[in-house]
Image (tube, rainbow, N blue to C red):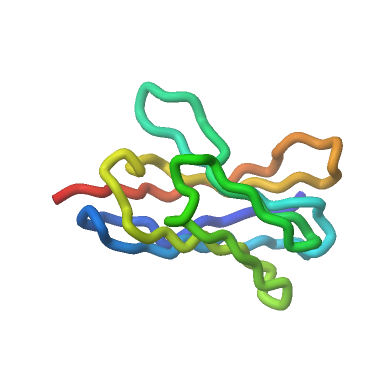
Length: 118
C-alpha cells in the first residue's frame, strides 16, 4: 500500500509563500497522476492542482497564476509552490494519487495545515 506524507504547512502572512511537499513510498512515475486537494472548515474538499506522469498540469481557477505543482521522480516527491497567498487559501492540504486515468484519487495523506493570516 503506497503511503503519502505531506509536509511544509504553517502560518504565513497574506502575500507570503509556502512550499508543500508530498513524499510517496512508491514510485510516482508509476501513477497516472498526483494531486493536491484542500479542505477548509465547513467546505467540501476540492482539487487545487494536479500533475500527470507526462507532466500535464491543471489548476483550480482560484489559484491559477499563484500556485505551481511540480514533481521530482527521482525523489518520489510532488511539490506545491504557493505564492501570493490569501486568507481564503487557509485549509488543510492533502496529497493523493490516481493509479490510472479511470481511477479516482486514493491513498490520501494525513494533510498539512496552511493558515494565511496577519
